[in-house]
Structures are given as C-alpha cells and as structure tokens.
Length: 349
Image (spheres, rainbow, N blue to C red):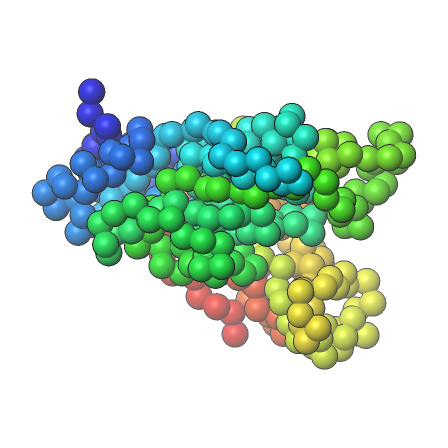
C-alpha cells in the first residue's frame, strides 16, 4: 500500500470547520511522515505551492486552494523520556489536540490543562502557538519534527529555534517551507495552576472544587468554552477569528480612561498590553449580527459563523468590515487568527 494518496481537483468543504465550499488543485493524504519523501518525489509535486491542513479548524477558504493541500494522518503518542519531575512525550501531527490533552492528564502530567477543548490537531499547535486562559503551547514544546522542503528531509527543531510568539512561530512565518510531522512536549508532574483568567476560579467554585488539580482546571475550562463558544459540529466556525490586539502600555491606559469597562491584560512585556478584541467588537454592536448565512455568533463576539451556505468570501468581507469599524472607533487594528486562503487580509486604516 502506498504511504500516501493524491487526488486532483478535490473538494474541501468537509475538511474545514467553517464548512465553506472550496477545492484543492491537488490533495494529498500522507499516512506516515516517511511517506513525505515518496510524495515529494512525484513529478511536479515538490514545486507546488503548499498548504498543510489538519482538522481545518483554523482556516478560512475565501477561494480555492492553489497548488498542494496536504494532510498528515499519523496519530500515535508515546513517552520518550522520564526525567523524574518532568516527562518528555512525542505526539504525531495528526492526533486531535484534545486527545493529547486527555492522555497527558490521565498520566498525571500538567501544563496543558488551560488549553482544554481547543479544536484542531497536534501538528497545528506549534504553527499557531495555540493559547488560551493564560497559557500557550509553546511554553511546553521541547522540539518540533518537520519536513523541510528546502532541504528535502526531516528535521528536528529545538524550542529555542521555533521563534514562538503570540499566535506566531517560525512555521507560520515560513508556511511554505515546513510540514510538521510530530511535536515533542516536556511536561511537569507538578505545575503552578493558572486560575486568574476569564472566570476559571468562579467555575471551579461552581463545581465545588476547593483544591483543584490540573484535571479539574481542564474540566472547568471545558465547561466555560462549551457555554461561550458555538460547537463547529452544530454551526460552521473556526473559533476565535480575531487575535486580541497588543498595543503600547500608554495606548492601553488612554483607551481605558475613555472606556473604563475595556478589559486589559498583561502581554508578557512591561511596555505593552493586550486588549480584549471581543469587547471592542461587541461595543460596535456586532455580536449576533447576521448577513444572509454569514454572521457573528450570539454567544461570543470573537466567533464568526456560517449559518448554512455562506461563502468564505462573504465571511471574509464581514470580518474586514468589523475590523474597519473597530479601527474607526478605537484606533486599534484587529488581525485574523485563521489562515486565509484564496484572498488577502487588508489591514484596517
């Protein structure tokens, strides 16, 4: 059996959580990382523009995908090394993220609990440096294994060389070069829990948990996310569509003087602060807004939704107008979280 399958002019509607219609010029499903060498040896394939597609939970097809769309199916996970206070594990790129989370919690490992219920695959985690509730995946990634298209071989990239940033990484900046095949995590057995974010303590109190463990935190965050965010199985969406904007400390303080209810968070730098994109959008009256089948969730202002047969271009147009409105009201530029295919994002202003 071949290590991969390759189709021409393939439909992608069932491969993105927005559930918008699009097609791929070429679609490859690779069963194991070793099959990448065989795939890239097919005449003409290695020269194609590349889009790596996991579960399609962080992408908006505003048009068809040119070139090669590639998905890696491997989903094994194993313990690589026990260091006593921490454990190194390796998970293949095709494993669903929440399955990895549950696997680690079941073995008494901590660190990832605040990332519960994030949709997508393990392979997408380092690309986007996924984050939620005060935690980013990059904090616990030890190394990333990836196919380097420039060198035509598998490589292991240490964490220090991954250039992790807020929803950013080496793999996102050089998207056409890297195909993530596996991720190595270094997870502690004991870890200071992060509870001071977005109602986590209140949820634990409602659960009657006085002395929480990582599994309790994951459950609490799962409950919060279930209430706040629409289920992609019920209505097409890609989770949070906009990043929380990072601005200078002075700009944040000025905005908060004019708008005392605006939530402001630490950014990791004393010179900068992070603003709530959801608050900025909701302040403009966009929450629950609908235009045909394209709209903004009534549950959460950060989530754009497909009520049925919206085209990706319609959803993108709505996102652009929301960003323009926020910029006009507050002087703050919103940026999208999902990868946009088939069109370019136009910064507001």
